[in-house]
Length: 330
Image (cartoon, rainbow, N blue to C red):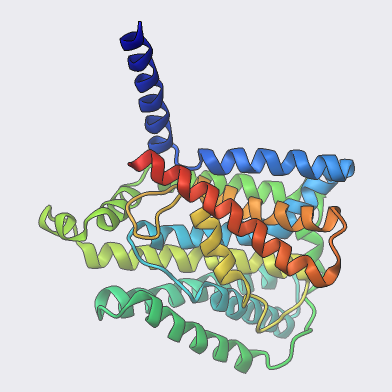
């Protein structure tokens, strides 16, 4: 009987480890459900459709930035310039829309230029890190200062408003569905396509063992550059969302978002050492950060204590997720 019990227990443990290895975002998902319940308990209206729409609208940029960070983390790299890219793209599109008149076609043209700007930033980072073999954390810290300087040159003072057509579209409702949910659906489709492409698998292979990937014939340098290009692309998309949410230009708007994106990636179950993780987990991690911020407000935390409590809550969530993930990989 004892042997049967021990074998069934081992089977359950093995099954749990298998699930966590295949879906490393499960601990984050459990934390997310718990936070939704706590938010609903302290503020029942937070579960209304309007409140959920507001949450998605506010933190959609962070979700996209967490996705951007995930693609470089896959390969064992990191990008500390994502927030600066957000700031740069934000001011570029604001200034262009103002100069070009703010009409429908000019808004689209400015957004396209903004996306290309983000991709160019990603190419610069990729060449410096993968091509010139500089340390990712140092190189992207340097480029973050450079991109911030460019943003301040383009728009020295914050406050230039976005055209009415832009922010009304972002905050609007079409066929009874808020525009942000169309954005979420489009991003989910793109991420689904990317997940089925070889690039995602190749990035994970490079992160797991770069030397083995190289010996197997994979173009490791090019793959890492592509990871940074994807990072720049999604950082630019995050900037478009920030611009729609704030309806203005600010050369420092993305400053605090960089470390939040790293925290979201780790919360979602990705390993900063590379080779493991999912974009789904990173999105969940970004939502966890948003719900923690909401919960701190709903429980009536004094303003002078809110940053301390938010940081402590995020730290606890990180510790819980990392410990469970380590147990699964053991």
